[in-house]
Image 1 (tube, rainbow, N blue to C red):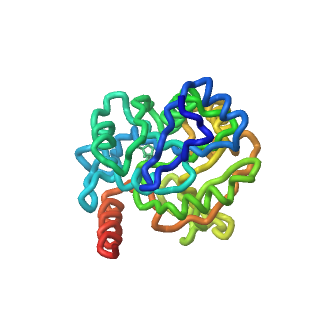
Image 2: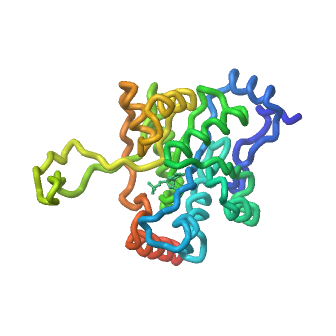
Image 3: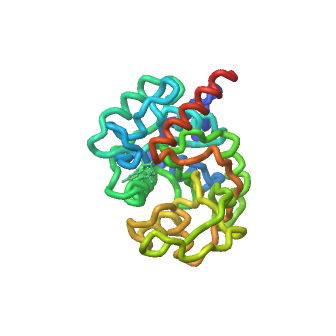
Length: 267
Ligand code: C5P
């Protein structure tokens, strides 16, 4: 059986290397070693707001399915122990995509997605625990739909949160003036913006803490940080990038395709 200590967590070509170890061995390793860092990518949504015939994660951008751009970027982050994707139980494409892409070697696909994003993340956390992750391991949850993520932004988050007792998330200060609407869609108020940030992903928390937080918060929360905040804790805001937007509407698809195309031309 492989000795966890002698196994590099990430292969030299950037693909994620997942050691095949027995559950008992990995549990012991987890209790004696530094917390490991796992990546969890919820990709079980239907993406109805994107107006595409197929779920947006499979929309082709710059020659590849959107989710492949996301996963390839995450696979290049150093120090990641495992990279895991949650898909819908009826999804038949993700496993095939992962198996046919050498850059995604070792990525695990879990068909355990639920009705909401929080349900999909909770199911993924249970899978992680069953696969031997320890409660004090870190989990970075990243939306499949944020396909412009860059490894260095994820690295910034890990460095900023590794020694933090709570954890944190990538976010950017709100650039625009913020209006509160009334029920007639007229401006009810203009809100202060200098203390407002837009939450992005990845969001990085301890596996045990996040599992408890999501159980308590219920399946309606739209990000991990909200669940942690509901416990009275204050996640750290780590500066992200405006390019790390979530592909949601048809215009986002066009913009993401343009950026990916431009990045390809630069390399
Ligand atoms: O719907 P939204 O764009 O907010 O979803 C954010 C991320 O959560 C997407 O990557 C989507 O695939 C995922 N999701 C999920 N399970 C759901 C709903 C969304 O994994 N039931």
